[in-house]
Amino acid sequence: MKKTPHASPTVAAFALAAALLGAATHVAARDNPVDPVSNPDKLDYRDVEARRPDFKEPFLRDGIVSRPEHFREIKPGINQAQVLAVLGQALRQQRGALGTEWDYQFKFQMPQSANYLVCQYKVVFDDGQTVRSAAWRRRQCLDLIPH
Image (cartoon, rainbow, N blue to C red; front, side, top):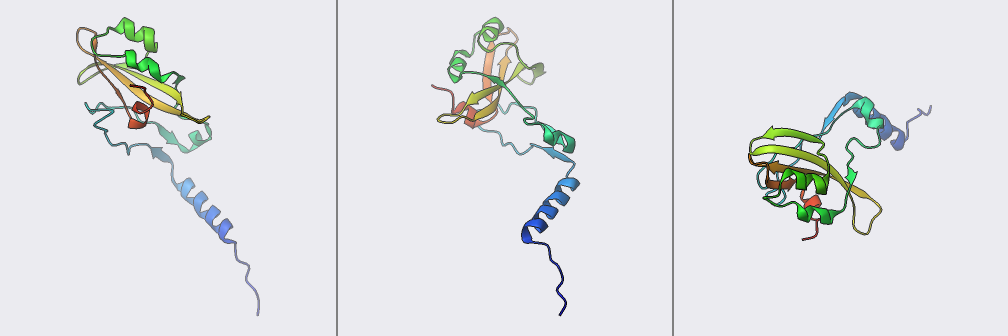
């Protein structure tokens, strides 16, 4: 009997993964349910989109390293200058359904870890340019803020 060479299961799995990655030219993070605790007004956040050549980048979304206790100072009624003093310049400013929105990305060190979590934060101002509300995109980020 003549033996036929077969690829090992590891090689076959690798080949299948490579084929699937080659076919996938676009990945988007669209599976983000609105959290009624961290984002009760259902504010819209920008997703990160990556195309195959971008996969070599170490991080597609990065943030400014910050301390969670600073966010206790962001309360309804404070003005834009006060927000700037606490959080710094926003990454993006635009008009939203509830007023002017300032978008931020912050990076927090995880408790008892050397790892970081990048969090999206939005401050919404009323027409008088005072804070109407502020919201985190994900509850994991809200949970890092001391109350």
